[in-house]
Image 1: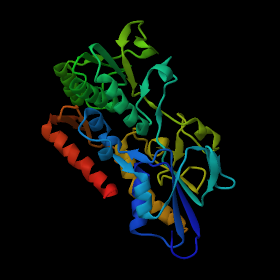
Image 2: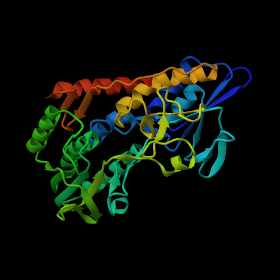
Image 3: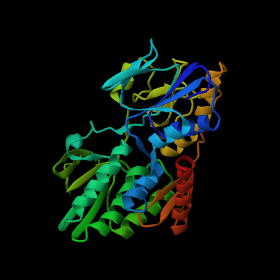
Image 4: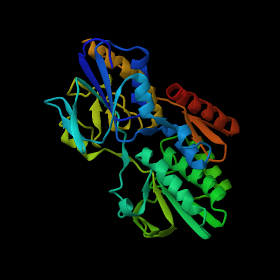
Length: 376
């Protein structure tokens, strides 16, 4: 609890990467009269950069998740384990499922996104979505338990050819081969466009070579039309056998965003300016996958959410002091390191790409260092 009289309530809705940094920032340098409240649907929040390594078996569940209850207790923040359903902006309240609303003076939203399953018939019933990432960890551990006793052919299909889909397919292939000793495994990656379409040609070339070397099947430029139990139909009418399907397609916004009256982008995500503040409500900030910086649009990737933490913390402080928030420009070119599941990785930035075990060790060092900042 803050020392002295309580003057301002800052509510952090969602336990994303940026909010984890805000909690630590205010713990290290508290503001008198300011109380932080964290509302999280999941108490253990995953670090997205380490999830493919978790799937591949390189990290335990604990190593790649931050215990929000422990973090909140250390920082002195209130923690409510609840799911948001909307906002009452007139009275400055966050509406929650199955519990009373929570009042705020300043609100920051960092609730992530989910794959858009509506474009694929049957996906919601017959596939495992990779987001929310917090749910994937438990589903994956349960899936591995079932695989231990599997015998005969095992067809796993991953849908989505972006960085997340590529890393997941390779991680699944590595881990399931080690766990399902009696299975004849075939992992297939299906993507409506090119593999790693937003990245350099050098990265695509290296990753296609990895797929070929490892024996994964790659189906490019063919969208998935339908998922049924045991099979996946592509837009050309062809069917793929599928004992399990994982979906890592383009992110979509939560339906309740549209009920808030806040400006949204064309895909339904919160529209924010270059200070990370809503373009229409000075009391609300939004970061991570759930928001779009209109002046500086970037891919919905964890690297940007991590780097929004410090400017968000600084601008929340400025807003509490009645000062104008400062502009923030995310980098336009960024390093992307894609693990291949087997202790190797491909690093790409701009037009170049390199591959090797040293790249994986580099990524592992970066990720573990970030986690130590918020776990120890």
